[in-house]
Structures are given as structure tokens and as C-alpha cells.
Length: 316
Image (cartoon, rainbow, N blue to C red; front, side, top):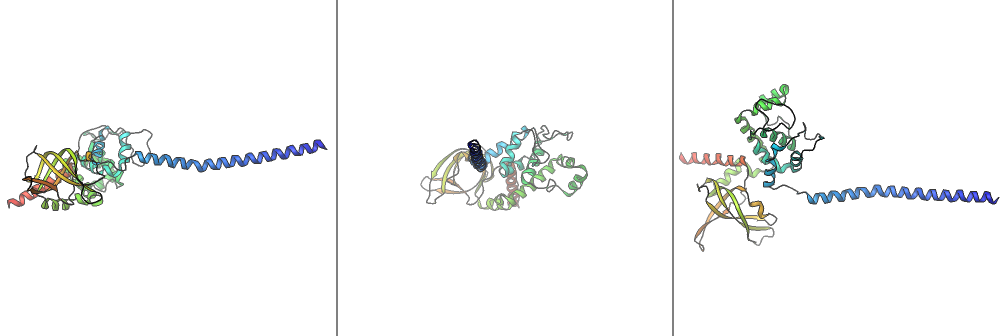
């Protein structure tokens, strides 16, 4: 009888230990499932702190200048590729920030290795071709959206070869670039539209392309987030008032306190109003209010066209 009771006791104890173990393991597993996402989210937050929210214009241009280094391009940007390509990956991460410099590159006919691994044309694959593919991939537009109707029809039967045949002519590349620029201005930067630039051009006393070499803090007005910075640089090209190339110029710009002084050290088009400082007895320059500071080849070409347009009018 004692043996029987002892057996029952052992069974009960084993059962209780089993239940306790089961509850412990279950709780551990459940807790593990709950804790893992928290750890993962924390890791993601740390990664987000390390990644810049948006590339500045200089960094974006440097990245676009690496287009010719790309070795692997998926047929569709959303497709995963087994082979990692640093340039492709960085451009996709940069997103909208590189759209302007990709548009600038459309007219670049420098030949490069076709990153799709295909043989395209006798003329070769160009940086401008890749810039268009990346533009379409990042903006999610239809591949043929910006192409003429005749090319769209050819595309139905010839595929991408219709695009390459079209862009083999320099004039077609320039027209394509204009269409992309119009789209960009309409969707992202209305202040860079030709209409707005013409308004700024009329208001300005001086429009010049400047290579800025130095930038320093000038003053802190009463506004909470606004500062004035003093920039110095050399004139690269004049679009209004015909200042000679190489002329040294100093001017003030209004900016937010968050703007890095280093970001000003670039080649930029400025619209200026000039005024005479009675105390120092010399002319000084300040940027036109609400006028954009412009970068990129496409904006340089737009300003040349605007200058030519006003020069023709002045001769009439």
C-alpha cells in the first residue's frame, strides 16, 4: 500500500513539474516573441539616426557622377538582384534628392559598360541612358511617358531599342531633358520653372554663376530661425550685368539656422539686388527675396536661353 501511495506521489510530483516546465517554456517563448520585435525596432531607429534624411545638392551630384561605375542594373528597380551594386543601391536610397542631377545627366553621351549585361547598339550604352533608366525607376513613371508618340508606337514592337534609336540624336536628348525638367518643376520645384526664373530675372539687378570659396556667419536678426551669412567667390559666368569671368564677389544670403556653411561651397546661380552702402562707400549685393539659388547644367542652359531672349528684346 505504501509502495502504491509512493508511486502515486511520484506521478503527481512529476506531473506538477511537467506543468510548471511547460508554463515556463511557454511563457519564455511568448516573451521571446514579444521582445524580438522591440529589439528589431530599436535597431531600426539607430539605423535611421545614422542615415541622412536627405542628401544635400553637392552629395547628390557626387553620387550621380558615379553612374558610370554601376555594374549591375535590374530590369525593373523593384526586382531584387543577387549581386549587390553600391551605386545602384545608393541612388535608390537617395530617392527624390538625385532627380535633378539625373536630369542633368540625360545629355551625357559618355559611353560606359551596359549594367544590364546586354549588347545594345553600335553606338554603345551611355551615362545619359542609365540616368533615364534610374529617373524612371525612382519616380515610378511609365518608361515611355516622356517619349514622342512615334517612339511610343515603335516601343510596342522594338522595345527599349526604340528608345536608344531616339536618343542617338543629340537634339532628341535635349528635348527629352526639357520634358523631364518640366515634370520636375511641376511636381517638386515650381521655383525652378522657366516662368518663375523669368520673373526673378526681371527683378534682379545682377544674375551670375558663382563658385563660392568661403562662407561665414554674418548676423542673427530678430527672427527665430533665420540668419544672414556672408559668402565670397569667383564669377564663372554672368547672365545679367556682364560681370567679367574671374571677378571676386562678396554677398550676403538669408538662410535658416540649420543650413550648414559648408553646403554653400559650391557652384551656384544667384539672383542679386544691389545697393550702395553709404558708410563704406561701395556697392553691395544681397539675394532677391524668394528667388531660388540654382545648381545643375539644365538650369545653366535655362538661364542662357533667358539671357538670349532678353538680349534680343533689348535690340528691337
